[in-house]
Length: 137
Image (tube, rainbow, N blue to C red; front, side, top):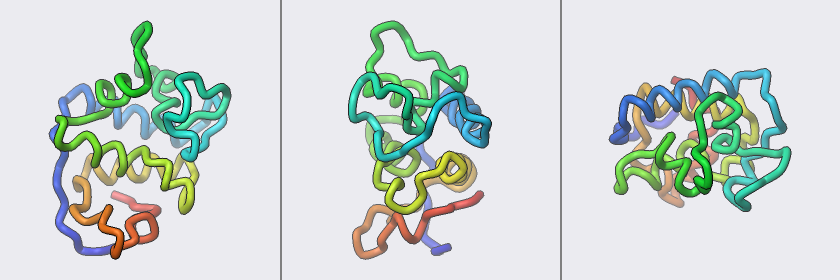
């Protein structure tokens, strides 16, 4: 694991609790199939869901008519400046190329809740998917 500096995202207590709840749920058994590569491709993604799509199955309510683009930041996101980092660290479809497992997604969520997000995880020269796959708290 690299010794990168980390930034703790500006999460509300409810968002932190939702992320912890989602992480626990992702450790199984799941109520539907899991596939990070289908992240937010459609509003209704059928029986295969990314980590965000499993949120309602974990008991994190999705409001009536709430799109996934609004649900994810409200339930799991952060302030505007942190939202993309949280999304990419926890839920990016790029993780499917290296670690397309519910346990891997849960590990990344737990890592972020404990350590924050590595400042340089998206720097192309750092190959963030390879460097940080299987991140454990």
